[in-house]
Amino acid sequence: MKKGIELLYNEDKGFFLFTEGGKIDWADHANDAVSNIYETLALDAAIGVAMEFYSQHPDETLIVFTGDHECGGLTLGFAGTHYESAFQLMQNQVVSFETFGLEMREYMKSNPKFDAVLAKLQENFGIGGEGALKLSEYETKRLKEAYLFAKGDKSVKLSDEEKHLFYGGYEPLTVTTTHIIDNKAGVEWASYSHTALPVPVYSMGCGSNQMEGYFDNTDIPNTMMRLANLK
Ligand SMILES: [Zn+2]
Image 1 (spheres, rainbow, N blue to C red):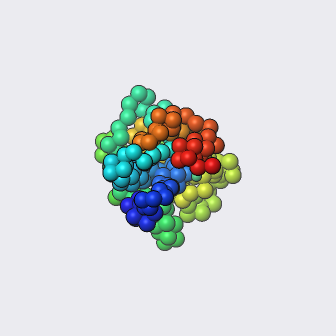
Image 2 (tube, rainbow, N blue to C red; image 1 turned 90 degrees about the horizontal axis):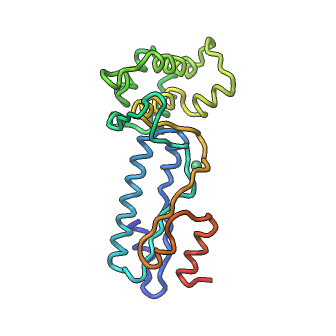
């Protein structure tokens, strides 16, 4: 954001800067809530830089913040935890789906024992430890199946429908683990794809009273152009 403003700033003509926190979407496709949170914090910091610019140019700056779609059907609430949540458990995850998935694809080639894989999961996600992070029988069964499937073990027979529903094309142990830690925290995913959930539009600055709430997506650029006196 800072570099973009520095390069585009033009006192006479003004400028338009579009900034995307694009990896939020990738984390959602992979059903990794912790990576979503870190990427959202990074975008929040970028918005902070835009707000600093706004504070120096309050009469001629409009900041518009929105998502181009929701992804993953991320919900705060999970059938298994009833009304409870335990978001602090997510702090035990120290790696993204992307990094860990690549590592696991390599690691599984060495034909590791299930216990060795569990040790890696404990190290990177905390699961398998004591208390709330202890794995239930059901969770262990899911991980065992993902392990055998990732190994290419012939004893696991999954239909294409099951493969997609369980793993969505991602590295099986990684996506099963993010599902488990997110569920333990009280978070659930509905999809590996973009969803039809509405996304709000927030804004600040010049003309912001005309850019708040829910918009038909094609009205967003039209309204911004009108506010900037562009045809
Ligand atoms: Zn996407």
